[in-house]
Image 1 (spheres, rainbow, N blue to C red):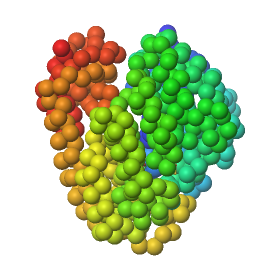
Image 2: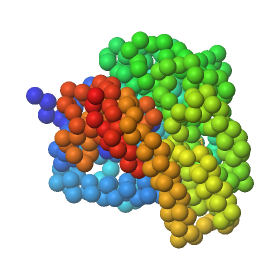
Image 3: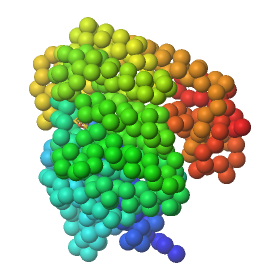
Image 4: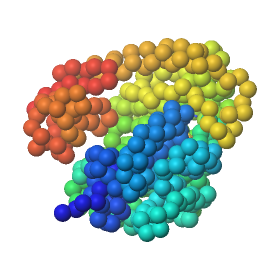
Length: 441
Ligand code: SAH
Ligand code: SF4
Ligand code: F3S
């Protein structure tokens, strides 16, 4: 019987989700078992995100809740890691106000978690071990994956783009790519273990291999994975418009496993704001990419995006350009954000910060247009039969199954739980704003 338990709480993006899978793998190798109950855990890890201010606040809220558990059981180990820990002002707050934290580590040394836990157990002292820069790419770490049928696969780490609003280049360090042979052998192993869908991860997958001088670029990697038997769907995240090549657009024509979807963050529809954001493309460049992608896929590709409203200096005219771009592209879905000031980024010092009420008002107007476009797009699915990778029970109704189409649409339908992990044909009966309803055929 296993009587040591761990609990991991994860905030943030897929990078963090995957780092948590690796930390879970390492803790299992140490003999810990996962628990859903924090009170039962001997080791609690909080993997943090710092992308916006509300992410920081949620972390401090969760940390506050752990004080009582730690007082009741001082042997419990509380470890915090992730992007927030790469910032000195956060470490200072933890030292001053959250004395019940035992271990602080960062994004560059998650592989040390077992050592740090053992050190706390043996020496009963607090440890702060955050590295300023990465020491290369670590291969061969274990991982306890959340799903058996789909997997996250890192291809690059870090980011060199320094968008003026963004904290990631400071928390994840410089961009570096995993070697093609390491990625391909991981994907082959995943396929052999029954994984059908891989999601290739990087802050800017399109610059894969360039900084490291590899012969293989991102499009080559897609072609190579397309040839791996057992893999049925290839996805990637995130694609930066400035580095999206015609060769990658060609892969949508040639690679039948490449999902007919692209997540292509635009951030703003105004070229003036894009310049202030240091995005290195214009509205016209972006629209040209969308045109080519639609051309090569016979106008079938699903397009999703990220948008920030209320970037410093954004005028009503700039915002109107974002709205008109949304009307023009008609996105299938969008993550929309209020600009949030991040300490240490260039935009923190920009003049003309936008008042919160204007940000909110613009945000609501933008959502209305986006939702209208999404509802229209989803209506077009009615009567069509689509392939769905079944992921589990629906969040709202345990008796209903949920899964995703190639285009990333959520589909809810009745069916047996035996279908989980399989790709099935589903006929769409209703297209709602945020999801589709269907029946298995
Ligand atoms: N590397 C990815 C984005 C990762 S962060 C890319 O370049 O597309 C995910 C999203 O969070 C970004 O696309 C952006 O829309 C949003 N974001 C990042 N920093 C932000 C900030 N300071 N305020 C509001 N939104 C932000
Ligand atoms: Fe942040 Fe820009 Fe890098 Fe994306 S590309 S992680 S938005 S700096
Ligand atoms: Fe957040 Fe770090 Fe990801 S800041 S979005 S967890 S890279």
